[in-house]
Length: 196
Image (tube, rainbow, N blue to C red; front, top):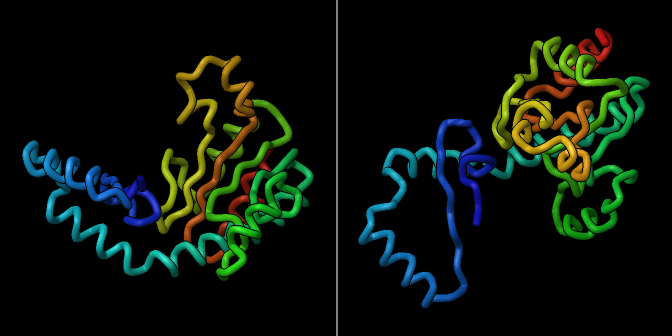
């Protein structure tokens, strides 16, 4: 099961999903349901997905490269408590990520980075609102870099005690790196961190 809305579409302009099967009976059952109920992707949306799939490899490579460079910078930044990125040796599953990416050009990570700012929710909000290049939004996998505060946004309805168990503290930030020039992204992050 894939969220086509994310990396496969890649341009934040389609809402779709995809199921892949290696069981012909299950495929035939679900295909019959799709045909009889009409729950198929619209032709234009399918074209958008096809268009996005043609640049998927290039976009993922660039986003992964950007994420690794940004992750290294964030690890050294004095206002960052901790960085979570499988492409970095500091990640608890780094060896697994590297093994899974052994036959590719990838760093073992992706375009997704999570990190904790030294400070509270107010400092996190100040940082996020100071960014000029990276957009504050609840998505991932597009050509543009997006950043969010899960405690307030994607997981805002989750009770605080459950968020804490998941490691979603008030100073937790999630960044989906896009394909912009990495120096522009780094300068934006450094400028935002300088304001807290």
